[in-house]
Image (cartoon, rainbow, N blue to C red; front, side, top):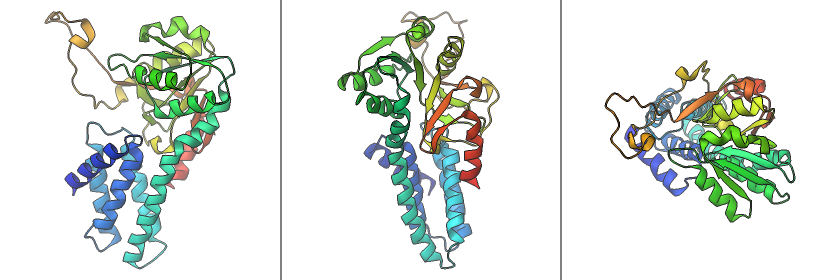
Amino acid sequence: MSRDVSARYTQLLQADPASSSAAAIKALTEIVSSSSSTTIMGLRDDLIHAGQALGQRHDAPISIASLCELFVRFVTRTALETRDFEACRRLIGERGEQFALSVREAPRKIAKLGAPFVNEGGAVMTLGYSRIVTALLLEAAATKHFSVIVAESHPHGDGHRTARELLAAGVPVTMVEDAAVAYVIARCQMTLVGAEAVAESGGIINKAGTLQMAIVAHVCKRPFYVASESTKFARMFPLSQLDVPKTEQVRTHAAFVGQDPPPPQLVVEAPSRDYTPPCYITMLFTDLGVLTPSAVSDELIKLFD
């Protein structure tokens, strides 16, 4: 079953690359329908094993474990509403579909909430690529004129995707190297990033370079906003960069030191993500509303209660 759910997740993600959360929910919902278990406890065990299989994928979001745990709790609560197992199975399937639909609608809702924070005639700084951030900026661009400065996010250059999508919509974009963030941030009225996961503390785990942008924004007194779905709220409490999950693939030296063979003594460290503490975050735009970092723990309690 572990291989089946992983393969199905891949199929769903290929069909709809926009939402890994919706793909995971859909895959778990199908487990409920196809499981041979005849009790809620057996079904719960199947879902836990399926969630573990998804979490072990190297390409899975780090928030996937919390999402799977949330789905298991959702199944357990639904089971309290009826004693008929088959009726419960059908009800879980119906609500799972509704859950996946609400996840797909989250970017539009977040964009509506965050767009008013973008100033007319101002400049917004971001880094890498986030579909939520891009949706928010495109929503704001429908009624305002502003420009965007994008840090390219070396070595994969995800910022180029952001630039292409914004330029296609007529939004002026300037691309800068990651090392130039401090140099150009004075031109910006705000900074806006996505998140791979939002921790219980209200801090975020995101693409490497997010922390330095947050620190620079803090020093330069620029608001630092985060746009994220509530499905990325994770029951984790990192205290330092050492607590950031490491799932990235091994990279070659050439991506960091040029094409010449590097000295054999050279040690290359290439973290793909970092942790930004809540003290640097101004607000979070989520499908649950506009939240302060301190409000995240309250929302997590509600989600898992």
